[in-house]
Length: 165
Image 1 (cartoon, rainbow, N blue to C red):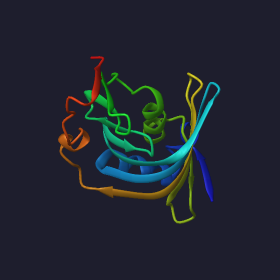
Image 2 (cartoon, one colour; image 1 turned 90 degrees about the horizontal axis):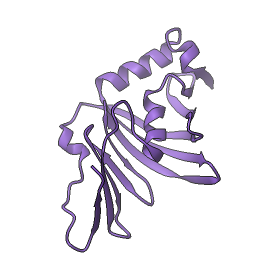
Image 3 (spheres, rainbow, N blue to C red; image 1 turned 90 degrees about the vertical axis):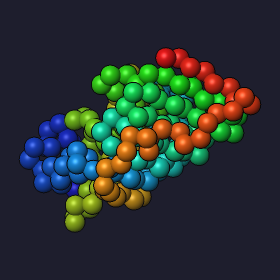
């Protein structure tokens, strides 16, 4: 297992260079077990993430988050609630910020297998959020239309929609 701190080694490490190239040129699909800590709260779970530039879809056991780079939809299907907000220029907020920063930050620590496969990531954000992820699967595919990163269904009158834009 090879451990790399991106800020110190990303220009010198071929695994990190390859990862950054893959992230820049493709749509990335990954599944990960994660642990999130913020303040007195600790969450663990499994996340499915599809990311391309500023756009992403993140699905966990309790919620789905969609971002087309302009708008973020946080969907809780079990309670039929959705929060809609403007994507923050230069980054997202909350759980999605932490997981997406794992894909995009110079402050992320990565572990790779000997053959260069990404196996883990961890990050501590300035606002006290820390995330550790064990990568279960990682695949680069052709880029997709930005519409792929929006909710694919309408929210009917039985949904509570809070639009914060």
